[in-house]
Image (cartoon, rainbow, N blue to C red; front, side, top):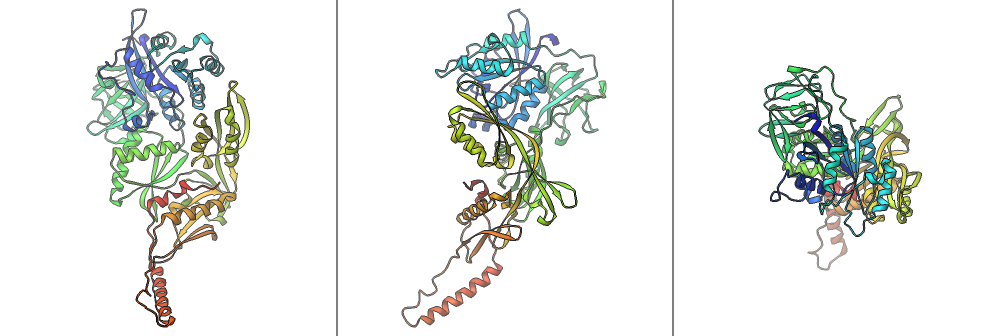
Amino acid sequence: MSTERIRNFCIIAHIDHGKSTLADRLLEETNTINKKEMKAQVLDDMDLERERGITIKSHPIQMKYKHSDEQDYILNLIDTPGHVDFSYEVSRSLAACEGALLLVDAAQGVEAQTVSNAYLAIENDLVIIPVINKVDLSSARIDDVTHQIMELVGCNADEIIRVSAKEGTGVQNILDAVVDLIPPPIDNQEQPTRALIFDSMYDNYRGAIPYIRVFDGSIKAGMTAQFFAHPERYEITEVGHFVLKHLPTKELKAGDVGYVIANIREVEHIEPGDTLTVKQNEATERLSGYKKIKPMVFSGLYPADADDFEQLRQALDKLKLNDASLIYEPETSGALGFGFRAGFLGLLHMEIIQERLEREFDISLVTTSPNVRYKVKLTSGDIIEVDTPAKMPATKDISEVMEPFVNAEIITPKVYIGGIMTLCQKKRGIYKNTNYLSSDKAQLHYELPLGEIIFDFYDKLKSISRGYASFDYEVFEFRAGNLKKLDILIHSEPVDALSIICHADDAYHRGNALCRKLKELIPRQMFEVAIQAALGTKVIARTTVKAIKKNVTAKCYGGDITRKRKLWEKQKEGKKRMKMIGKVEVPQEALLAVLQIETD
């Protein structure tokens, strides 16, 4: 088919605004999938996505549509995630498209991620088609939401399409708008071949499979694929499109979205953002790719069984193919043995990766509490990056510690502004300004330390606002702060997996709360176990797990008290000897205690 009749677009929106449901209706309307095969969230192929009702991965699919001009068109749709932690998936999808449907819930209106995704699309010079979804709801505020969208993207009211993805009304208008408003890809078939790898997956039988958008030239089976990230070459055995399953085709040409199979067994040879070219029509300049996002939350991943370490390494290699934002490196913990220090985009991203490792690769994991990356200026003048408390230098060697700050945007009904501002103040937030998007909805801007929001900020925000507030953030700079490493010592031994970096003003409360929590979680031993929180060499909090005691005087009936005292002294000596050689096993629930502490 001519490039003139190809349209590449994606759906972007805040979480739970109906992206996957709209994608279902588009597939039905274009007869890509018949009624028998239809199910809710048809593109969400992971069990996790269906259980949680969220999109985790972007999903490409090709549809054929007969327009009112009697011409057949090919529509390549990419359904994207809506949660802030998966904005990386959205940025990659946008790089493969010429247009985007900006979906807004008629009841909830413009939310934080709606704003963020709209800006991402504008930066990529995409044509934005605004759509109001769920217009059939009794709580729909169509006029109010129309005004919010006009303010956001600068369009006219008559340019906004109103639909109900659940009922299927208005879907035809969306398909017509995609054909009429989104420009076709530029026809560069005569140019040297260049294709952007925007995603990939691993197949046990066919190796690593890159998902590509072809910008220049064409790709056919029998050609030799080569990449800009490494010198390896592979013979292409199959190319094709996505129509629920992989559908082989003769060639992928400029403007097409599809996949390439070349029996690539080294998973690290496929790097999303890299440019694929072919030896037969080789390009010398790579495509610009897309903005790389640095992981901001770090956690240790350790196999519960030490023998599974190699299996965990292979699982992470394969998962990285499917999620390019995941980074990891080997590390060793005194408490947990061999494992990996992994970087994530946020707490939900971390939770999803852990669940996928356990479900898809059948590995039982032990995870440490999350922390962020700090920059430490040493007295020698050098600056080092620290992403785990175990790497923090000695206090005498530190000149200053810098922590990441984020520009946070909170969109909320105005009745909850007071509670949200109090929460931000507790988290050391710096207030910037408030904008009113409508008579009832406000947009708050704060600067917040990332280390303060990775634990329970999102949960508390949802509790205060009864689920109505939405939150989006972007890391913008590192600032010096009075930060200290808080060590936890169990039976006089520091447990590196429990150490945290926190603000000095907060250290006593955190240390005290953590000691109390650990006292509940660490089982009683045959000897007394001291749990201490320390800043450097100074112990700031302590609790004790009492020893299990046998009643050694049970056999004494009456008689002189000195008989009992002798038995008690003998028992005390035995406990003292046991304490000197005793080891305390720390259960996994205790390692996660850092997440459960309440300090306010």
